[in-house]
Amino acid sequence: MTLVARTQSDPSGMTQAVKEQIWRVDSQLPLTKVQTMHEVAAASFAARRFNMLLLAIFAGLALVLAAVGIYGVMSYAVTQRTQEIGIRMALGAQASDVLKLIVRNGMTLTLIGTAAGLAGAFALTRLMTSMLFGVTPTDVRTFATVSLVLIVVAFLACYLPARRATKVDPLIALRYE
Image (cartoon, rainbow, N blue to C red; front, side, top):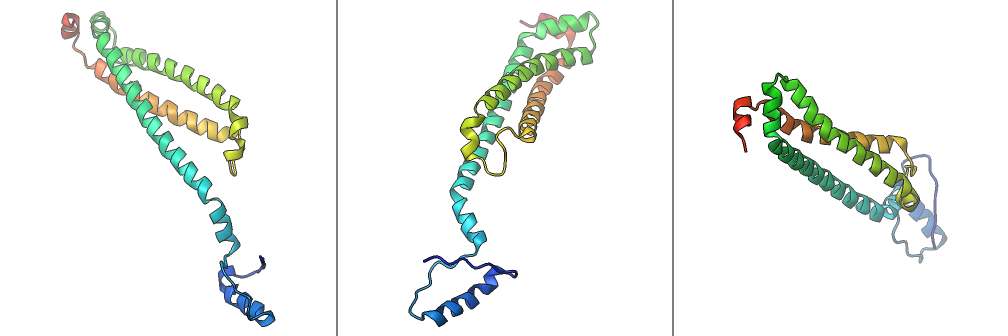
């Protein structure tokens, strides 16, 4: 048997009073698993919360891997273009020009990837609807926040190798092979 009681005051303080009223009616009735509605709701969402925690952990790891990957690719690209960067700087390019060139290169790829990811995410929203609680499948703030975080992380991963490229001595870069 299940009994649900509504109260204006703190429900945990009413537990003993409700038990006493039930025992007045039938003293042989065993009362087990007395919970507040908050506890019942928390227990029913425990599995989903755990799944979402795992998803958040894996998403964080994926973000770190993406940042490391972008950094590695950009570092490699800067290393491959060291001679070109040296020539540009020897011909009068400013450090800010080199920085913009390299960051623009990386950010173009990032924006294309973000657009493709958003398109894929919007396409998969119907499958995710049953897993969401308190968020609509096409929540603009969620999509914007995730996109912004990815773009900022990618910018930082592009900026660090680009900054290193601005410190290249043109004479050393021209001899680099």
